Amino acid sequence: MNTCILSIGAPKRIGFISTRFSGTDGVTLEARKWDHVLQGMGHSCFWMAGLLDTPPSASHLAPLAYFDHPEVAELQHQLFGVPVRTRAITSRIQAIKETLKDELYRFIDKFRLEVIIAENILAIPMHVPLGLAVTEVIAETGLPTIAHHHDFTWERERFVVNSVNDYLRAAFPGGLPGVEHVVINSMAQKELARRCSRSAVIIPNILDFETPPPGLDDYNRDLRREIGLRDDDFFILQPTRVIQRKGIEHAIELVRQLKDPRAKLVISHPAGDEGNGYMAMLNERILDAGIDVRFIADRVGENRGTNAQGRKFYSLYDVYPHADLVTYPSQYEGFGNAFLEAIYFGKPVVVNTYAVYARDIDPLGFKTVEMTQLVTRETVEQVRALRHDPARRDEWARTNYALGLKYFSYAVARRKLVARLANLFGESM
Image 1 (cartoon, rainbow, N blue to C red):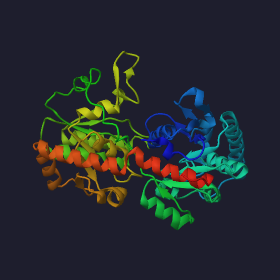
Image 2: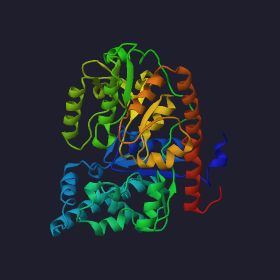
Image 3: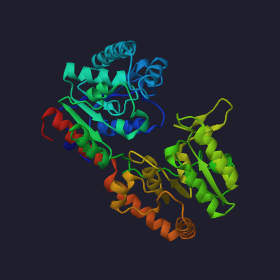
Image 4: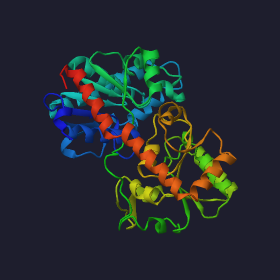
């Protein structure tokens, strides 16, 4: 592809800002994909956050920007679940905000930034002082900004009662000119317009469908054996964190109803930051169901490697080629990275029809086993039929991959990011 056609004016120096760019959370993953697309168009990208695993030469670490920094976590705890804040808390918000503004100005000056991309920090108030700091810096500099929103305040019950509505209106997402708002689904687009009178463009989560997925190689070929599975086991992969909205109890129920000792549920990610109650409930369900479930988060990392004991780490892309089926029974998702990953690797998917899937993904024609909050006999029979019908699995894989290439590839983001930058700089494409 001739990337010159898809770049606007001179290459830009673009700064990504968030609480963290590290690990495999959705914001980090999508920011890396945008970085890949933007650099492919000739732009230069730089990073600021409180936790980073980005290239040091292009990064500015500001520890206080991390949402789990002790000072920030203590402050945030006092802002939500209560209707009023004290003057001392207001002063603390302002003090942290001012410190972060200094860091933002250092970041901008160090890398001579021409554009900033605010990754979710002007959407969900995981770090109120950081959102305020970014908003004020935009107001003071007029720096062209793309606000990439993944989750909004109103989408999370724990933010409903709070003592910072004045700050939420000011900065989450705020109303400054010169900001291009980007959301990842049509529901967020409509709610942003209804609640905040802000227009936004949809850039869905993406994958590099232009590049075929990796398969088995000398490194990952032994994964089944390493996690205790046989070659003829029915490998059912749940590729999500262990948190309540992922609906993992439905995957457990599916395996129970299959009544096949070779059906093994493999959960690739660790528990989230929502306490231990959900994991305890899942362990009870597993015990009652009498099924084989493997938690392999201690063997799966962002990249290949070895731990202190010399045991191999595998990437998630090492796990997918081994899976026979992917379960994705989430109750709520902003979009659905695991769904895209499953179709990228050509795997059949059992998906709960969560709202964004029902509105934005299902109408496109993807072939899946669908469930609606319940694992029914029909769900189980569809899984059994697919397992014994390789021709149908292959047909689904081809159809789904073609749709992924059409609607969720890097080319989609490339076109839409070109338009966002053109709007910000008033330049023709």
